[in-house]
Length: 505
Ligand SMILES: NC(=O)C1=CN([C@@H]2O[C@H](COP(=O)(O)OP(=O)(O)OC[C@H]3O[C@@H](n4cnc5c(N)ncnc54)[C@H](OP(=O)(O)O)[C@@H]3O)[C@@H](O)[C@H]2O)[C@H](O)CC1
Ligand SMILES: [K+]
Image (cartoon, rainbow, N blue to C red; front, side):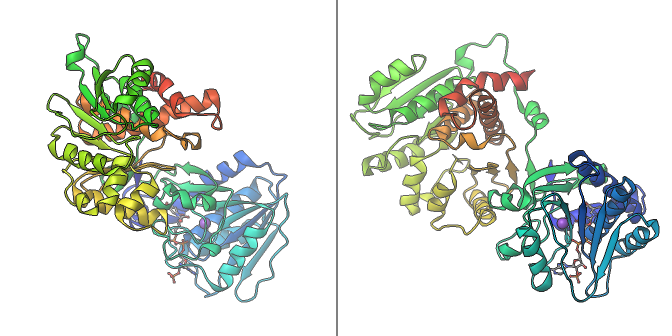
């Protein structure tokens, strides 16, 4: 699913009107019918509905919804805010239709003072104040109204987007003046702010409603951001050759683990083995020998000269991909070995965890990374790499996008919806995964998966998309079995076969 900007959404709206063709008031009616059905799916006509409508088309949508609900015998009260005596054409038309229908129990047009109605637990508030046309933070009377709605015990449904929330950048927004919805019914496509973890508190549960906007426009219009869906991922899968032998299925090298962190190496290596690769070699400090040999008998052991840490770069010419970083530790010898390793490696590299922390500690090295490197930071690791803390998730995402362009690499910013920032500036959000995966070792598993896919011969962009999707999917399948609370990183590995099977089916 493409994510369009507010400006593109506006264009899509106009394109649909001229090319379908459909009158804009009829398009609004179509949207309103879809929204009304979604509301009726959730609440019966015994639930009183209180509608707050703004002066634009978001308000127009909500006035039409009010009329349609009233026609379905819902008890409806409507407050239309027209403080500048200026309604959009379709909002004005829907105001008239609502009055003419005579079905709505209570209708107030607020032009000056507003005495708010009591909002009780049994009611549903429909927030149609502002949608994608919001162009500045809410202040004054609208801010007071938002605060009033936010503190009321009624359930809140936002049409298209919670009023006060911007579609993209909320850095300079006033966060107390944004509706906190229980349910958001967004039209046609998710907006970028809906992908940000720190905006989830405004959005509540999210449903995307298809209002049949122009497919032609959607298909032909380039979007900078998109959400990875199952059908995209299925298209990316390479079939396995029936005559495959291990030599042709990729040779992966994992450099991971320090004394006390052998587990990270175990997880990355086991995940790598479970992701279709022919052969995995793990390079790890001597003292990990027994642990590794016992935990992952399928892997080839390559022992470092040192007992407890990675000390010297190794020849990687025979390998098809390198995964480096999980549990590596931060001692200075390891840092020097890491940079040597990155320099002498010509196959694709996945750098994670301590590899990223080391790079963050040596900012000059950040400028010398080979193009095409894949880095998989969580937000804190990314902030360290970027050299400063981001104020919010949007700002962090834009920095990651800029960094990926600058270093010509791939950055998977891990989180609620992991975001893959590509060297060409595009961003791909992952839709799989769950909060149970916020657990130690989960990242090591992703490193293993990515290394395997790269060794198998997937190009970097494909490996990143497929890898993050599979990782999240395995986590979702595991959560169904063991629950989010009890999920551990090994469960993700255990469910990787089922994740592959689900995509292959
Ligand atoms: N393409 C679709 O998906 C469809 C969307 N529909 C609905 O339309 C809205 C977008 O409608 P639009 O009229 O463009 O915008 P809004 O209703 O969100 O708001 C515009 C009015 O709000 C004023 N405004 C903006 N910011 C503020 C603010 N901070 N404080 C007060 N007033 C504000 C703005 O006034 P200006 O003077 O600044 O222009 C406008 O009066 C979308 O969200 C959907 O709900 C269609 O119905 C179907 C297709
Ligand atoms: K809204």
